[in-house]
Length: 240
Ligand SMILES: Nc1nc2c(ncn2[C@@H]2O[C@H](COP(=O)(O)OP(=O)(O)OP(=O)(O)O)[C@@H](O)[C@H]2O)c(=O)[nH]1
Ligand SMILES: [Mg+2]
Image (cartoon, rainbow, N blue to C red):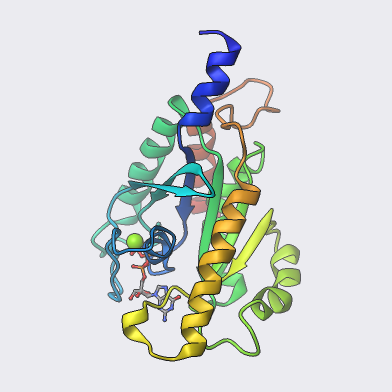
């Protein structure tokens, strides 16, 4: 296949957008917001709702994206998806993407009410590896329907602290995904509509045009992303 064909193939194939974050952060709800429907199952339960990764194809601004819902990493040994299993599933999944189309964008999904310091563990697990590559990471903050004076204020109040803690993002969106059947408040409905716009714009603006497959490209021995990820996860587990 020549270069022109390669480029055409990339243009028609949806770009991979991987959502990650702790259980209950609102990953599946965010996918439902973007898909404008109830395609991904969500749950208010403390135990994990999404137990494995799943793809959702969507067109935004005439461009194709494949949103990947993933299982939360922090279920503990008692949950539906024990931590070790979730990690195994996740690494197998990333390894699969690594060998196929690669990853174009990572979305770190967090709840607005969560203390900023508590966001570090999951961030580290992913970004200590991904940070070596050029795949963009953005943050989407959920559950901000009551945040005053406006949702955006979350970022203004917290971005410095995130940065001080070593969490760096290429972009952000402050949202609510609260379903319209759960609220009649015009303000919340307006915030939800704004959230849809902001998240779509974020994906369009920040999603890489080309896939990132060579994770840690500046690592001399060119170890695979999978090997590096496993090493980092083990290190984080040992030191936390
Ligand atoms: N009020 C409010 N609730 C939300 C919002 N986003 C998610 N939720 C609720 O939070 C709960 C968890 O949301 P999910 O989308 O299932 O979270 P998840 O990250 O997919 O969780 P796992 O699949 O367990 O990893 C559900 O009850 C959602 O309805 C939001 O923006 N506002
Ligand atoms: Mg889910």
